[in-house]
Image 1: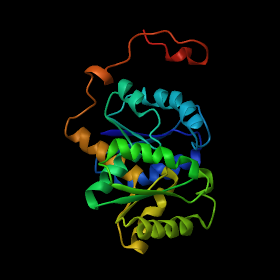
Image 2 (image 1 turned 135 degrees about the horizontal axis):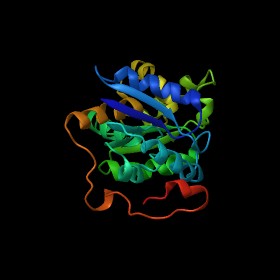
Image 3 (image 1 turned 180 degrees about the horizontal axis):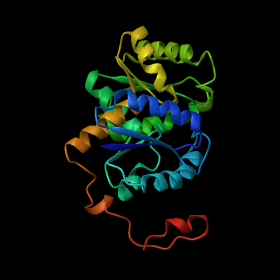
Image 4 (image 1 turned 90 degrees about the horizontal axis):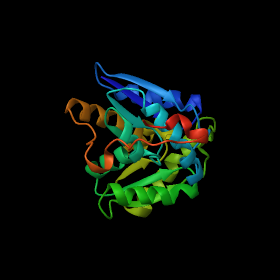
Length: 239
């Protein structure tokens, strides 16, 4: 099977990190194709960024694959992607939160900037039962600085330790694809499950494909109706 792992921002080095995380867990016979969005922001750290990332995501999802991973913790454009994709589409926040809820009574999210905490809370309300997400904590390290800041891993792990104690949680969810490489070290140091959404989404998509399940085309996730788009969106016209 071929899984297309989409980095919704335009930073190639982050795509490489995402690809490594996905390939590390992919099963035998699974080909991971990591792609960088062809248009959009260099990183996604606001609602504005998320909105402008969606056209690039939809262009990437239009390429055929058995399944797709959206590798941004805000899960931007997830519903729209499901309307046009040829296989199941899973967001990394969606996969991480579901996985966390299965291995503990409550989880805490450790994310990047404080301004993104509200989005994480919104997604938790959609994805998991009330009370499963016990807190969202921001390290206030910008997404693109996670790769280059030598102290980023320690700050994330220290914040995760604080979150466990403050929230009374027993699982940590890493709230950014750029934190994927921290998961194993954080779990070993903290002694609790630490969920990387990229890995979780990759395995979940594999499972859906093996089960022969794809997004239903009845009602809401049916292909969007033919429509003309203009200006910069002219290429998205559907006939």
